[in-house]
Image 1 (cartoon, helix red, strand yellow):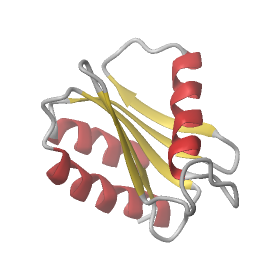
Image 2: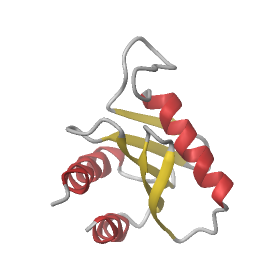
Image 3: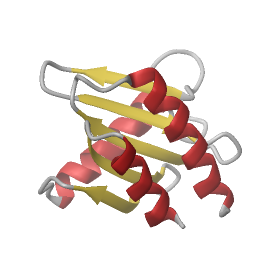
Image 4: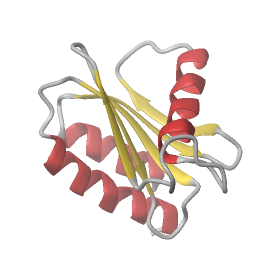
Length: 120
């Protein structure tokens, strides 16, 4: 189920290069879908960045409350982090090119993440 949702999301958005389904309570990447050759350390760093940007558990690193989504942009890439609605420790970490239609991507990513998190 998770693999199929990640495959479908990356297939829909050609500008999405890496997707990772993660658990912030353990700060572990559970499943990845990528066409990039990312070492484990890079994936671990992506999960740590998600915890920093969104907040993990009762710990909020940035701002006063935890976030539902966050975006980090550079000239070469967008890193997006999305939290599941019903399971706040389930997050989707994404690396995309700057040309990504962020608004449309976030709608689709959030829907798919919520389905993965619920197991349907």
